[in-house]
Length: 418
Ligand code: ADE
Image (cartoon, rainbow, N blue to C red; front, side, top):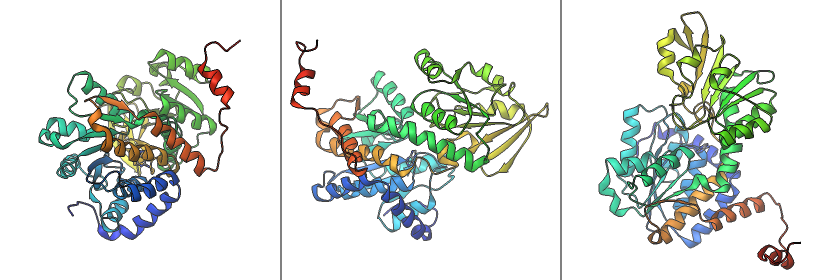
């Protein structure tokens, strides 16, 4: 089985960590059980480009249980766990091409090796597989039924491809399922971003001023958790409705130029490019800490910062100190890569449970129904989204009320009401 991993001997450590995650992923475990008998992915070849974590390992096991032949590469070189890759290969027979901290060249080589698997379904986190298929590997298109996309940034990329008429197979935006973004993006990013910043710096949030760029679901989640730890939160936004929402949620809202001199910690969660630029670094206090929790490492203009710096050094793991000509210091976390996965372990398993349940059920949906789809970006079917919520509630032993017959009738009738 072709693979490229760091060290197969790490497998025993990886296996117990995967088992620990599995304990917190009951929905995925239930789907795995169903997949074992129904085999909805029999005959499918899945190439996946995801963060290679313990949670992803449990998704791979589930896809395999459904009958799929699975190959995986990393969607970010810093989030790969070499222990997990070892166990996936040694214990679970998954083809893996991922090494922690891989160079750019190796990262793209791994994407291509994962595509050599000749997928019928692609599974992306950031759309790198879809992009590579459409640019360099068009020969693979004839076998591909469809794809899935895990994250906001990837969905934005895919919609741009579809708008240009360039998308050559249907892709389902798993990110847009309510049981994905309302939980993973909000509570997953919220907690894991705090986790990454604390592991890197051990800084005190209480009483500090935290500037958050972007008030999408990730920004909202991180703002909640930063405030919960006692920080004074400032939000910067470009969308007027979101800006208003942040204001009425009780945060201060202003431009990045206004916030730059005030912040102790700056975190970008926008999905856009150069959100914190040279003109902002110019205004920051001595000791300001800067991090990114968006998918790609493009949100902080680190080239501008490097040009402004008289010197730089790594002061502790994942913390680089830039000393500016005027003597101020600015600290960049995890090279501006997504801090929650580069400096911590990403979202907790209990929230990835729902995201990856959507991935598994959507792969089965593509396997059965792709011939009814056009080359567009689709949302996850409502019944899958609702099923994931129902299964999660069941796992949490929570019952909810059901509508009475009268209530059903009332909601369906425009004559009743007053
Ligand atoms: N994205 C964010 N957190 C993740 C995790 N723990 N595993 C896989 N993908 C993720």
